[in-house]
Amino acid sequence: MQLKKIAVFVGSLRKESFSRKAAKALIALAPESLALEIIEIGELPIYNQDLEETPPDAWTNFRERLKGFDGLLFVTPEYNRSVPAVLKNAIDVGSRPYGKNIWDGKPGAVVSVSPGALGAFGANHHLRQSLVFLNIPTMAQPEAYIGGAAKLFDEHENLMNDSTREFLKKFMAAFAEWVAKYSAR
Ligand SMILES: Cc1cc2nc3c(=O)[nH]c(=O)nc-3n(C[C@H](O)[C@H](O)[C@H](O)COP(=O)(O)O)c2cc1C
Image: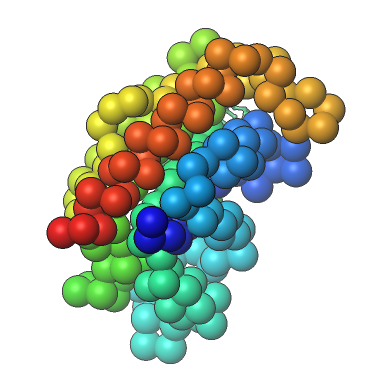
């Protein structure tokens, strides 16, 4: 079994973020073939193409670090039916300078999270639009729209609902297969 390194991105900076709790649950439920790590994106300066002549260290470190990963897991809330700016910014930073897209070819998956009933469907699919352009082969099924997120976790961040736990476990098993398939190419 070859261990695959997966970078996990959380589209929220909030301390009590449901998305971050979901990301931690996904990490805990992942099969042993995946080594997952949350990559912090809150300190990346907002993308400005003028800065590419002498890029901020945070951009350079982020771009270099990402080279060492085999796959990508995006766990995001929805802001105004779209992707929160902090996550879009990280995607933009990784995509440039032109011709040096660090995302290129790395297999990915998307989990969207909301306290609302729609499970952040809008963010999930807006994000997929960018991932297509960046050539991130993104797992189609199972889809993960996690609604009712405010009622999913207890005070220790444990999932309270067996059916959600089972679903997230299956999702991560499918993602491990997806990553293995793409890495073998
Ligand atoms: C600027 C803003 C816009 C939001 N827009 C949406 C939205 O379009 N759809 C939705 O389901 N929730 C929306 N919400 C509510 C978020 O789902 C909620 O704040 C959630 O807790 C954010 O995710 P987090 O817990 O991971 O921080 C919005 C929240 C903010 C702050």
